[in-house]
Amino acid sequence: MNQPVEKEILFYLHNRAPLLFFVLDSKGHIVEANEHAETVTGIQLRGTPLADLVVDFSGTFNPGSFARECHKEHLLNIKTRWGLPQSYYFTFKEVRNQVLVFGRSDAEEIEGTRGKVQSLNEDLNNLARKLHKTNAQLEQLNRLKDQFLGMAAHDLRKPVSAIVHYTEFLLDEASEALTSEHVGFLQTIHSSTALMRRVIDDFLDVSLIESGRFHMNMAARSMEDPMNRSVALHRPVAKKRGVTLKVCLPCPLPMIPMDDFKIEQVLNNLISNAIEHSPPGGEVAMALSLTGEELRVAVRNAGEGIPARDLENLFEPFEGGQALKARGIRSTGLGLSISKKIIEAHQGRIWAENLHEGGAAFCFTLPMSPQNPTEQDP
Amino acid sequence: MKSADSMLNEELYQEYLKALLAGRHKECREKVQMLIHKGMGIKDLYTDLFQRSMYEVGELWENNRITVAREHLATSITDSLLNLVYPSLFATARTGKKAVVSCSVNEYHQIGAKMVADIFELHGWDGHFLGANTPAEDMVRFIHEVKPHVVGLSLSLLSNLDRLKHHIEVIRADFPQMDLLVGGQAFRWGGLEAVRSYGGTQYIPNLERLETTLAEA
Image (cartoon, rainbow over all chains, first blue to last red; front, side, top):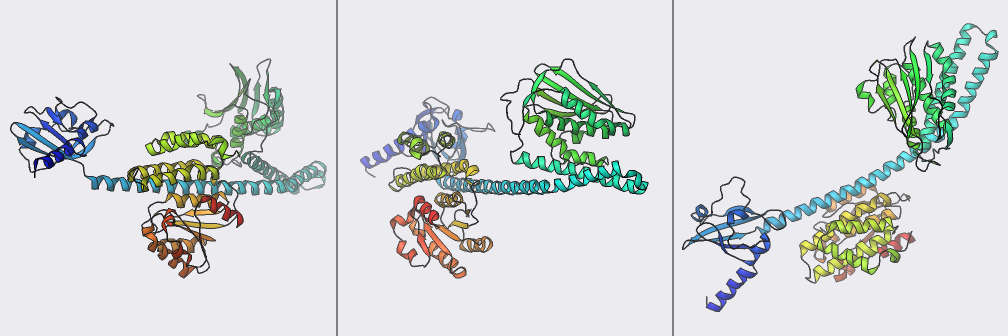
């Protein structure tokens, strides 16, 4: 090879070629390096020990001993200016008290890996597309289910209400003309259809909530009104079960924005649950308190308490119902989840907790000054 | 829905393209999110941003102005950005019509075909996308399963024309009446006559034409 050609090759290797080239002194410090080595490492290399550039977990890197195996390639990882180490196959050769070091990257391996990563990325994106598509289909099916539920519940409510009212009428007006067995039949019809109407009402509420049409009629009200109405409604049932209802109201109660009929629905749900969970002779206590910016309502019962595993999911649809069902109490399993939606629409919180003295408390809060309180969809 | 011009001006487009070519995926994502937030329509986003930039990236690669690695990076970023559109894309009202869109064997450029499947979705069709490098037998099995009204085939490299023809022939053997749409950047260099010789096969040069075709369907 003539000298000018050799010179051009050396120039190219030194300034252009994408390989690493170092000349080390006897102590392993860099005496000379090519352009690419400086680009990859991003530092001034002259005087730097090569060992400083190598990611050496085992602490066994030794350029001198590597140079004695000049026929062998060593896979080493080099610290780069991009933060991530880069792998090179190095050969070391000792020449007149200096060590020549050449590092090459495996283009085939890099390209193969890049292709595979790209293919995995495409698979991931395609799966994400499928997931979005399936989600949209499920949402559509859910909307159809709610629509069907709403229509069915709406159409069933009228005839079921008629049965409840006519049974009430017969029990009030015609009991004396009937045998006690027939009165018992009527009472069973009445309680069964009343339960059916509650189920239908819950389904209608769920349908409205899911369709975003469960609107709140917010106005400044005192909690006293829905509380009194709810307690009055439950007194006969409580008396029948031998349960005492006790109400503790602070005086005076502030007027706060609420949909009082929806809040009454929540209270009805919590108080009826509390009565059903109280043993005969037990007490259900309703306590209202003012804490800072919130009004807090607690409904306590003296029952067995709630198993820890049920506490977390109690307000999920059908979960509360499962807990109640296990105790032999009839429930749609939707009451607590509807209550949660109502309270959240008021920007409040609702939760359940077991009491140290036994029994459980269902509590909710309503903010005194909710943000944008005029109309909230749950 | 606001017009594309009012949101995606030339300056913003050039900034996006620059970020795309530099591999700055976060910047690209932010720009697309901003456009979606401002109410830019999906069709405009696909044609005026994704399609335009990918055509430009393809040209830069064909003219040896960028490496294949950079072209793949830009494609991967664009592919991931399509996910931002999907929540609203799949929520469009359904027509009950179905399309299957696929790339033939050895075709690894999937993004164009995927955008075609998405435009079907935008028009209320079920746009099933089978991905890159799909064997003809797998595609036919899927067509039997889904029973689409239309099948779309994408060709990016003219060197794969014979494979595309094989796909068409395999489909025609089982579904002689099936409407076929073909498209892709490969047809800028030829191959149209070969594809048109198969009856019931229509060439769709870009997303705008697909839009028109679907609007007329």
